[in-house]
Every structure is written in structure tokens, then in C-alpha cells.
Length: 345
Image 1: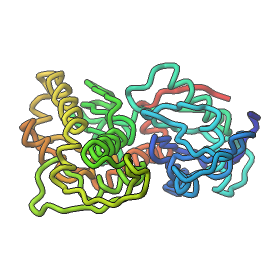
Image 2: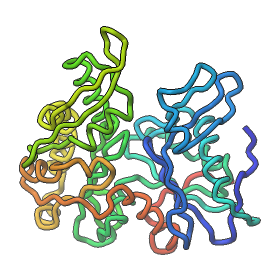
Image 3: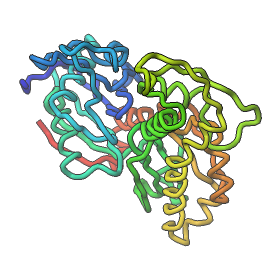
Image 4: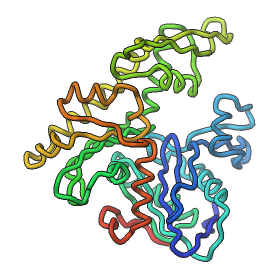
């Protein structure tokens, strides 16, 4: 791959990139979020050239001929395939259609679970698509900023960011992480649990989007006041033919119990690690949920019930991370202490 930049931004037009397992979002300084696309790429099987990226590539999942493969180049919030990730990001940045003479500074968000090698892979991708300087920031920190929590104050703030590939929980104070816990369980693990349940109980194989549809329509972490049923189509394991079934919300909740319990136990472990001096802050201020997984109905109620602390969902939890990262690029001087200075061009 060429190291030549595929985009140039006017002086001051720095970028924040939330390079997530499920979606990629880009914030441009002074402009807000300018791109929100699924982290999916379709490439030609023989040449490796990008055929589509983002929404158009997501539409191809499970439907491509042998000459094209559609894939997610990130797994568990980490770069799984650097070359394909670079190609995807190039398509996204090219679509911004901006021109300038300077390479931007770039803030990139990563889960707390990433290893030093995985962190370096993220930095490499940003450098190769044109960044002159890369700052890496852990997702729970910018999620807390995006949720409006006062992370630079002496009082503790507690955030749980449930993304597509991982869940990160942290207690923050004075601009730093006091305690944190992470697991590579997130929205994708919930989709997989639903798919496994339908296959076991209905002998039906679901596509990725069908499992997600069931989660959105009938998923919950706490019993619903009005149970629902969701129709879904898949491939019959016995006949190989398409078949439609109805899945009840109660059984979806039971299917989700495994990953949901892992998330609850993760937060319980975080609270157990909280320093005594900050325990009162956690009890008073509670826990804030961000990320797409925070939208699972009843998750806040279940956590509050099991953990005994107030729990609430942030406003627009899907964009909390990119909002926080965007604040970093909009106000580098104030928020630079929360950033880790990575590679420079």
C-alpha cells in the first residue's frame, strides 16, 4: 500500500476517528460528525481491490458471489486485517471530498483491551492514510467525556461503554483512569448468542443481520411489561430451504443472559476495585451506560437491581465515544492530558 495521503485537510481540520467493530465514525474539527458508516468492506477475491465499503458493503454480507468477499476488518475493537482496514478508511476519507495542504492530527479511539501490538496497528493505519500525528485514547475515557461527565474533577465518574466487539468499564477522576475492567463481549456476542439459540431450538441458521434484527425488536435484559414476538427468516438445517419462524421476547432474553451476565459481572468487578475514597461518589453519581449495547432494553434496570447503584443510559449512547473524541480535537489544549501521544509522520 502506498503511504501517500488519500486526504488533506485545511489547517486546523484535525480528525477524531472511532474505528469500531460495528461502525466507523469520523469527526472533523469544527464540523462535527461527518461520516458514520458500518465497518464493512467488500473486496474482489482475486485482486483484493475494494468493491464497496460501509453501508453498500454491509448490504452484501452473506449475499456475495465467489468472486467477492464481504468482511469486517476489525474484531473485538482491534484491527484484524490492517491492509483491508486501511483500504476501508481510505474510501471513507476520500468520500469527505476536502482539499488542503497539511496532514491532520488524528485522535483514534481504542478499547481498553487492546494489546500494545494492536494499538500500534491502529496507529499504523492512521499514519498510512495521511495523519501527521496520532493520539490514541481509550474508549471509556472519551465515552465519559461524550456523555458529559466531569472527568477532570476530583469526584469520580463511572462509565460502561458497550460496543460491538468489547465492553469497557472505568472509574475516572482528575482526567485519568482510577480503575478499569474490559472484556471482548459486546453487541456481536449478543447477536451470536441469539443465532445459536435459534439454531438449537428451531434448526434454523440465521444471517448476521437477522440475529441483530431479533435483538433490536425483541431483545431485553429484564422482563418486558408486554412480551413481543419477532418474525425472522433463515435457512432450515434439515431441508436447506428458507423458513420463517416467530421468536418470543422471553426466549430472546434467556438467549442473551450469558453475554448480559458477563457485562454485569464486569461492572461488579469494577465496583469492587473502586478505592474507598471514591465509593461514595459512585453510589451518589451512579453508572452511565454508553455504546450501542446500552440500547438493549432493561439493561440499566437489571444492572441497578443487581449492583445496587443508580444506572442510567447516556443521551445518544451510540455517539458518546465520537462526541468525546470530537471534543478532544476541538479543544486539544484542554483535553490533551487524556490523550496518549502516538506515532508521528
